[in-house]
Length: 276
Image (cartoon, rainbow, N blue to C red; front, side, top):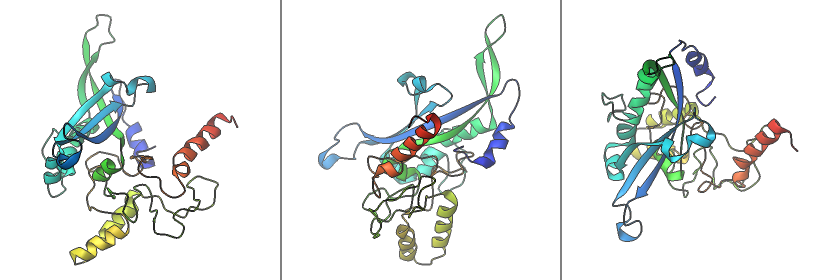
């Protein structure tokens, strides 16, 4: 569902006795290897991306031995060349590069199908080649980390700091009750999606002055015209905002996290189990 209804018939159309379909999730965070505090803070900062296989059962998929480090780069290099170049496999103009070493490039190879060795089902054992496909379903991380792979604010001091919706902290309704749950009063805020965000970016690019473009985008909580977690780099990620869940520790917007995450989880639990 996270990849959108339009992708479902395409992915389900991949058939064959040797076809294996895999789903992946990624986690991103910056870490300090030394001098985490004081004047040297940030000097030795590293960006780390990990992936795990969603096909595995929940008790197994997050164990350390099944979690793989796929990208490690100094944050200074990422600032210099851009997240799209280092992680997504794009070039400085936002196009697909020839590099095959980025996480995005590997997911594009998975999307095309890779011949990998699997234990043979035959009586004599051994290995056999099977065509393996894979797609990135989810990318998670804390508030500033996800802002770097999206285009939203990296600071909670922003007027619209929420990466998942257009909550305005300066609004008269900012701290009144609101909810995105179904069968509730209409929400006061709109959830972000790729279509509306791209429309805002396109509208801003028509403004001639740099200051005018920046003011238009920051007014809506948008701080970049490019997204590293984008469907042109990661196939079938049609809505990156739906594939990057909220970070409750940093983003306690509106009347609290219960309206967006805990309430949604409780609603699903009651709907499925009917225990209340």
